[in-house]
Length: 195
Image (tube, rainbow, N blue to C red; front, top):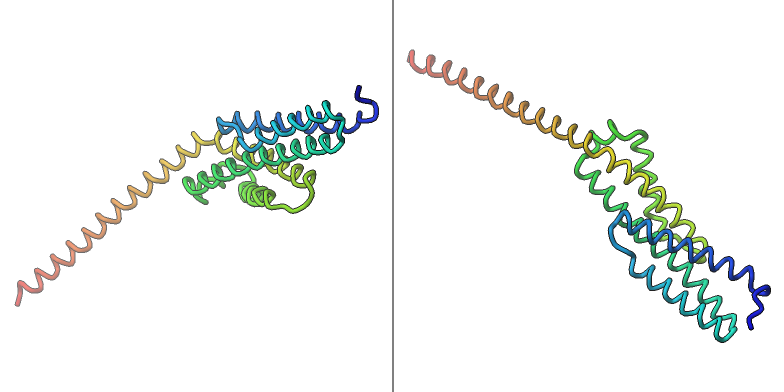
């Protein structure tokens, strides 16, 4: 029989980490449409070590279970960060720097935060530090991405207006050039015609 009182705090931490990892895996799945395989594998390893701990009472197994849960948090959040960052990058490329600032409040701050959040996957430190940094960054990027998705119809409308404006500007420019060339040709013909 395992003395659960002795391990109460460790079990609580493990359960919290496992729940946190599972929650992030599910949130990422909702946004992306697929699960983070590395995170799922880490949760599986955590469960494996937990069952080994229950079987053997070896504290090392409990520590391994906790370590894998932390890694699952990191992997799920990292997967979400990469996806959201890449999608935000696509929005930047499609809508450019002229349209987005007109629609998205605090656009430049959000884009700086987006870049900074992406860098969190490179952060050094222990598993807790890395996992927490990635969780916070994932939630920040997720909100920026959602705002862009919500604003997409307005962004498309503004982009279409911008393209229509450019099209008409090109037509006017072309007609102006044609008129100028025609005028010069007429003047030249009348000058050359007198000689």
